[in-house]
Length: 136
Image (cartoon, rainbow, N blue to C red; front, side, top):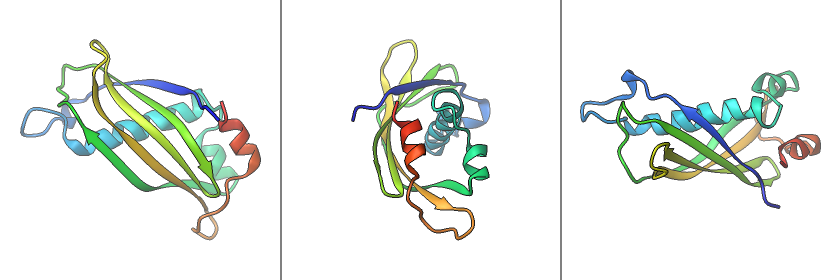
């Protein structure tokens, strides 16, 4: 199945900048997580609050980030994400952090998310109705 690519514009903040005068590497993951949180609401129509109400949460199991270009405070960026696979308790999301003006990729990679039960804290199979909602 081919899943949609969603975009979220992210503002670089002064406190994202490190002593080398560019965005600290740890902020790249923050940008992707913030974009996904917003996309859950705007694109999938299922907020994190709704997952919690159903007794579920998502945790990051694995992350790969390929840094390609430094980001500066004056840059405008867009985070593009695409769900590429859902299997059992996990979903894999590819991402690209793109400079808005040039379209150049500053970083790319993927995140492997695992759905857990809030009650047990253990991985739990993603329900079919959630898979259907995310299959856009």
